[in-house]
Image 1: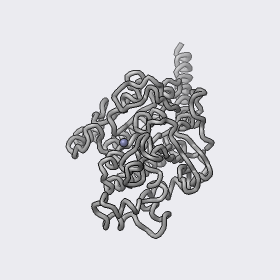
Image 2 (image 1 turned 135 degrees about the horizontal axis):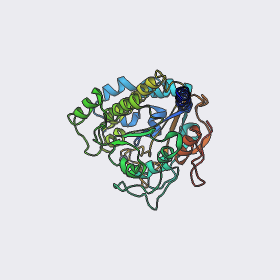
Image 3 (image 1 turned 90 degrees about the vertical axis):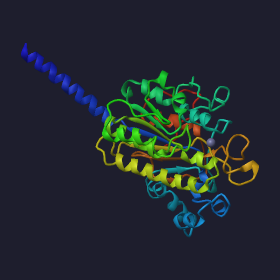
Length: 359
Ligand SMILES: [Zn+2]
């Protein structure tokens, strides 16, 4: 009797061990978005026309920090992680100067439709045509992953914008979404308690969008504690600073977000659970204009702003071919969801979604 109990327990232990092992071997994905960050800034560095315009407050400082002797140098100064790490170990798509094109397929060209397209793999202009807090009827790739046997309870989202609980439909999907000024909940560590406390003590610039540093650290603490396998992090500052015409802040935020992503990659690559088995997919929900005239206003985006549907994406991970910059290609934002499914080896796509990229 005793013997058989021991045998049973041993086999349960070995089963659990295998399950854990398997779980560890399955890849992890971090999907990261920067709201309304232009491909022009990612691929050519600081916009020197805007730098020398009235939109810039401290020309001297921005010049010192972000202007080098070439386009290559400028973009590396602005986004060092993108150009020192992703460009060397992964892929960067969307530089239209080398005919690498990434476009939205939705015609709205603003946030909710953009995130819906990224997260579901298809545009839905009939139903998703405002930024209103309406629960998304579409099922995101995050929800499909969370519904799959091996990833149940292993999906989490951290977002600066307070509309995300609706976009991801946290009620239906059961995915924990910490967005806007929401506190971390559950069994909190000291850092999370501190973050809950200080996120409202820091300047509240926008009621609906918190500063990205908080989103980042809420995500990082959760990741350390729970080791989710699918993480979505949505940074928001870039879009809001741009809307206000604050070029200095837009540029500094882009630079800072690059550093936050670098911090996360650094953590992941030094953590036994994630190391060499984790993919970062980084993109944006829409582009914006390039100039100061009405049709192409850099502060703005939407269907009436020229070329604001031009976007970009970056991919980094163990089985991603180190191609650096893509050339002569046309990619669409609706391909991201299927690419995630492909990486995770999950059969959760349908014929209406964009096709997975070849990595
Ligand atoms: Zn916007």
